[in-house]
Length: 280
Image: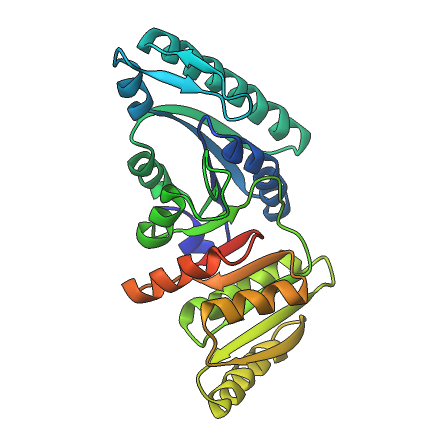
């Protein structure tokens, strides 16, 4: 079991690496967050067993995304490529850990990426991964969706090339997870004198008013600047449009539990292209 439940903080962060550019791009952002939280960084490079299986077929070919060049593939070539990529990932982790004075660990595992991600997440508090793997589209990749739906850990999902930055928006719906999100944001910003923009989601005005009072009671016990925004009866498109219009660079929100809520969150995350931290 991780130490988070004992001390209430993030002590171990997992960054998931594979051969995709999105996962490598998330490494720098993960190191910065680990340094800020004084957390240990565990990097796991996953050799996708499906790539090895496909490369053993006689018709296996690789098509370059950038040049459309077609390259013949076989299992031996794929093994060498994965080994070289893992070596580069190891060096990148070592270099960035030294730069940020981080405690770090690097492991290489082989298997199905979704299963290996969930297995590696057992002993950590926070999972960090790129949102779309090899895909250059905006939508969430299958691994990110799996983590949202099945992992019991907090999850931070990065679009390629972005970092967790201010200004910070926080979605509050009155759940226990949204109170935990407030506490996490407060710990994250305690030395920065920065404001948390709290977006209150409610079906009725009176409910939004009650939720704001709940937050105000929390603020009375914490030295934290907070601003309030109400969204009454929002859908995912309206919420996404609001997030974009306010110019938030990062977002914290309570992780969904029910299947319908999970579908709603994944649809919402397709509407925004900023780092999103899901708090359990």
